[in-house]
Image (cartoon, helix red, strand yellow):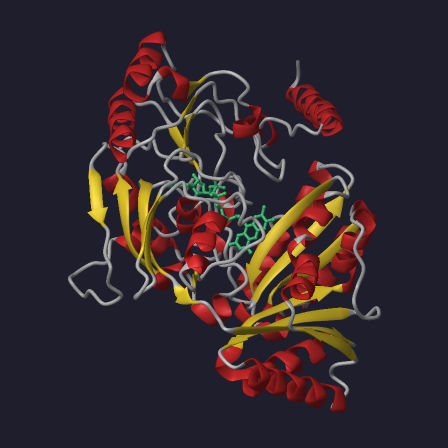
Length: 499
Ligand SMILES: Cc1cc2nc3c(=O)[nH]c(=O)nc-3n(C[C@H](O)[C@H](O)[C@H](O)COP(=O)(O)OP(=O)(O)OC[C@H]3O[C@@H](n4cnc5c(N)ncnc54)[C@H](O)[C@@H]3O)c2cc1C
C-alpha cells in the first residue's frame, strides 16, 4: 500500500471513529485522535494488583466500570486505564508511588476530574490515582481563618465549613461542587474572585506533597510570611500533577463579607465594557469582588439550552459586577452612584442591582452555566487566554470570521477584571478541519499580543505542544530540569505539560 493510501485510510479511520464516538457521546481515544506514541513504561501485571490490594485494600483497587475516570468532564479526551487506586492516607499514596517508581508504572493523579485541558485523565493506560478518599477537613482556626484539609476535599464542602465560622474560601468557580482543593492547587485555579483575593500562590500557606519516589515532603505552614530560602510550595501550585501528588493543603480563608451586591448591566459595545471596568475600579475600590463580561452569543447559548431568562433587555455585551463589604447601605450607595455615572455617559444602557441572596444566585447562574450551555451544541473547543484588555475581545471577531459556518457559534466571556478571556468555538461534532482552523492560529495570535495561552486552566495534554507560545525556550528547559530532578523516571502524569 502506498504512503498516500495509508494516509487516506488513516484519515478515514479517524473520521469513522470520530463519528462513532460523537454519536455515542464518547470521545475518541486521545492516543488515536492526537496520534501519540506510548512511552516505554511497564505493563500492569497480576503481582502489581496483589501489591496494591495489600496496600489500600481490595475495595479501593478498582478494575471495572472505569469510563467516568477515563473520560474528562468536557468529553474532549479519553484514556484507556485499566486500574483506579483510591488511597485513604498519605502513607498509602507514598507506598503506591514508591512501588510505581520502582516498577516504572505511569500514574495519573485525579481530583474531581473537572479540568479543562485533558490533564486529569490518562492518555494510555496510566494508573489513575483518585484522591477522592482523602477528603478530611483537618482544621479551620476561628481566629485566623487558617484552614488545613486533605487534598481530596471538595471545594464547596470546605467553603461551607468555613462559612459556619464566618470565613470564606478565597476561591470560587462553577465546578465547586465537584472539584477538589488538591485539583485547584494543582491547576492554580483562578475563578471568579481573583480580582479581590488574588490567586492561590498568595492564599496557599503550605502543602504536603508525595514525590514520585514516595518521599513525603512536609511543606505545611500556618504563615504568610516565611522567608527561609526557596519557596518550594510554589513549584507544586499549578504543576498539574507532574511533579508530585499533593496530599494536604493549608489555606488562608478570608472573613465572610457582611454585605454583597450584584449589578447585571447591558452595554452597547466593547469599548463601553472597558470604560465601565475602569469606572468600577474607581467608584467601588476595595469592595469590588468580581468583574465578569459575557457577550450576547454566550448568553444566547444559555437560553437555547436551559430555561433561563435575562433580568434586563438584549444587548451586545453584559457585565456582572459584585461588591463585598462590611456596610450594606454604604456599599449600595456606591454601586448606585457608579451605575448612574455609567448611564449618564451612555456606557451602561440598562441594569439591575440585586442584594438578596436568591436574586444574586439567579444572576450568577447566567455566568456559571455558560460553559455547560456552550458544550450542549454538540462539542465545544474551550480556550482560556490572558490578553491585554484593549485587545481582549478582538480575537473573538477574528476567529468567528475565520471558522465561518464550521462553527455553530463563536463566543467570549470571562474574568475581565483579570484580563482572562474564555474563548469558545461550538460545533455539532468534533472535526479535524475545525480543529486545524483554530489551532495553532489562536496561540500565534495570543503570542503576538504577548498574552498567555493559559490564563487559569493550565497546559495539561491539550496545550502542551503550544507551551512555547507563552514561555521562552530557556524557561522550558529549566522546567524540564525540574521535572527530571523530581521525577527522573517520568512516571507522574506523562504526556502532560511538557513534550
Ligand atoms: C463548570 C466549570 C467551571 C469552571 N470554572 C473554572 C474557573 O472559573 N476557573 C478555573 O481556574 N477553572 C475552572 N474550571 C476548571 C476546573 O474546575 C479547575 O481546573 C479545577 O481546579 C480542577 O480541579 P479538579 O479537582 O477537578 O482537578 P482534576 O480535573 O481532577 O485535575 C486537574 C489537574 O490537577 C492534577 N491533580 C488533581 N489532584 C491532584 C493532586 N492532589 N495532586 C497532584 N495533582 C493533582 C491532575 O492530574 C490534573 O492534571 C471549571 C470547570 C468546570 C467544569
